[in-house]
Image 1 (tube, rainbow, N blue to C red):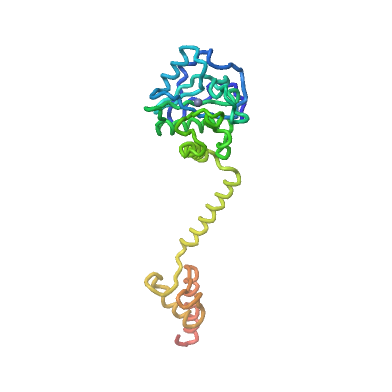
Image 2: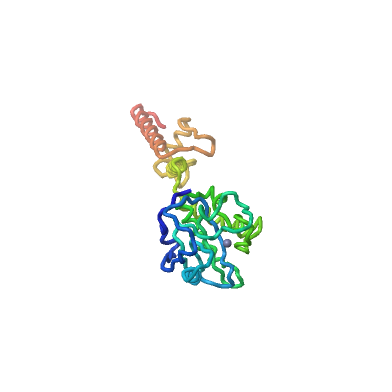
Length: 276
Ligand SMILES: [Zn+2]
C-alpha cells in the first residue's frame, strides 16, 4: 500500500523506457492529487493485434469511457494515465468478485495482443518486469503478490485477460511466479539471512583451511623424504601411532616433531655410544 502523489515515478524497467509522450484525454479518468494504492490489475486490450503506442494514441484522441495507466507490448511501454489518477479500468456494472479492489485503489496495466487477440510470451515477460517495478514501488513483496496482483477477471468476472480467464489458469500462475522470482532476486537480504550467509561462508572457510593442510597417512612418496626414517623410527618405538593402521594422521608440524625426537635420541645415543 502506498499513497501516490507522483504521477510518473517509474521511468524504465528491464531496459525499456516508459514513454509518457502520449497522455490520455482527461475525459477518460478521475483526477486526484494523491490516492492510496493497494492493487495492481493486469488486463489485455482484447484487440486482434495492436501496440502500446496505438492504444496511447486512441485514448489521447477522445472521450472513450475507459482508460488504463500503462500499455505494454513486445518492445515498448506507454504510460497514458498518471499513477495518482484513477484510470477507468476495473469498474463495471456487474457485481464485483473482489471485496476491495476498485479503480480508486489500483493501477491497471493493459497487455497488447500480437494476433488473434493473444498476448505474446514476450509481452507477458515485459509486463512481469513492469509489474515487479510497480510492486516494489507500492510495497508488494514476493510473499504478497498473490493477494495484491490481480487479473481484471479476479475483480469481476470479465474475461480479461481472456487467455488467463479461468479459476486455475496455469498462464496466470506462471506470470505471478515470474513476478515473485523477479522480486526475490532483487530484494535485499534480511539481517538474519545476511548473518546466516556470513556464518555459512565462515564454515566453508574453516573447512577449506583444514583441507588445505596436507595430512600424511603413510610413509610413501607424498611424505617428504627427510621425514621417512624418523617417522618409521617413531612408529617402531611407539612414539606415534596414528588413528589406525592405515591412518597416521600426521600434519607437517607432527612430521617435524618426529624428526626432532629421532635426532635428539640419536644425539643422546651417540653420547652414550649406543647404536640405534
Ligand atoms: Zn480488463
